[in-house]
Image 1: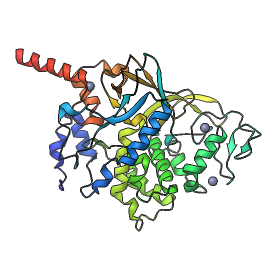
Image 2: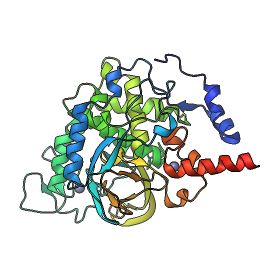
Image 3: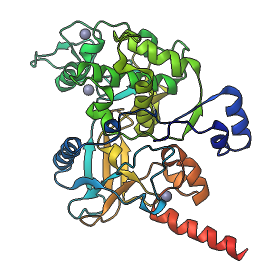
Image 4: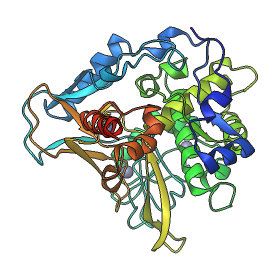
Length: 392
Ligand SMILES: [Zn+2]
Ligand SMILES: [Zn+2]
Ligand SMILES: [Zn+2]
């Protein structure tokens, strides 16, 4: 196990010119594993893998399953410096032949956040219609937005969403004053992107606290996620230090006594969410007068099944998010015929980004791979680049 973080200078060389200067000046966060992490917290155990297999089978109607992937094999994945233990990469595989354009699965998650969720369901973020008619959870006769028995102001689009919230996370936040997080972007306390990220941490922590799991990193939503170590991002004192502590305190955690939420645990959790969250912006937010206005809304969600799909620069499956309604559902559809046993790949890059050359893609994929992409297209194009170099 490597107990000394590598000297920063060595890694900052990976950044280029101006970017490097800027990072050095303002400070940056360098994601590195906590050296004394219990190795059990880095493995996806067999119980977790079997429960994922069951979920894949049920949600995809038997179309796909999860298993060890060979995607990084070409690259000698075991990087002793950044990954203390060789971790088996998982991937999603076709369990039978899948036809072009065939829907593979719908993956819904309550682990989502919007920088401004006003006028939307608290669980799925769809736009609430007819807010003057409010039904209470359990009273299934009336429709209209649903409220909870506790009397909190949150509203839901349907009874199912209200129940998910009561069962998974609402008890942890019931009665808590979360205004500074919920209105952070409106009050100019945070940029919309950071506000959405903070709210995602809040939602996931609320779920962990409400569950019976005592070690946050063993919560199934977190245990299955892999962090991307070696990545950099700008350091913001407020966002990286103050916010995590404020969230824990708002949720009733004593940051000096409750060591299960120690700083390294929080930052491991944040690194895992950072690597796996689907982030995008949609054009419409709701004004206080309840009209949709044309102003960007930042959205982040972590979908459990989606997060197990590996990236390829020539994907055979595509993901769509329901942007107009802004639900946290990710829809996976086959782009070409996929034979039984073949791995299903999505692209973490947009269609435009996929058109770029292999070296540019490598840079854009840095956040996830810190090094090379293991896909077949990159292998081919990399070989071409080498060959041209030799000729020249
Ligand atoms: Zn809903
Ligand atoms: Zn409540
Ligand atoms: Zn690639």
